[in-house]
Length: 109
Image (tube, rainbow, N blue to C red; front, top):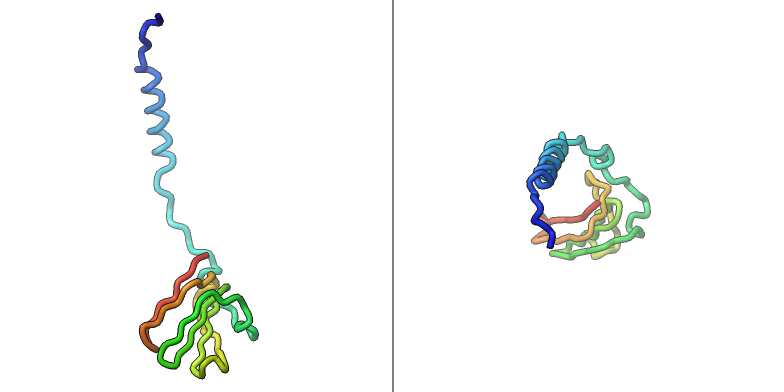
């Protein structure tokens, strides 16, 4: 039978290492947003042929959203579309409108 071992010095070393890592990995300074996040989506002549991921129709307004920040709007039942100028190039994956004036668009990088 082996005699019991003392965990004191080993435990103290692990605790010291953990404290040192916590200090070194402290809060990082805030980073400036990437320039692409501040740029508007590119106005594309064929945006209505790009990948569109969601759409909604409410009170004669149709809105479709998709990749590269594309938001397309139609007020004539989809006969013609215009691309909205929006400050993102992220993929837009969902759209909901309460009425013609109030709506939400969501997406991710």
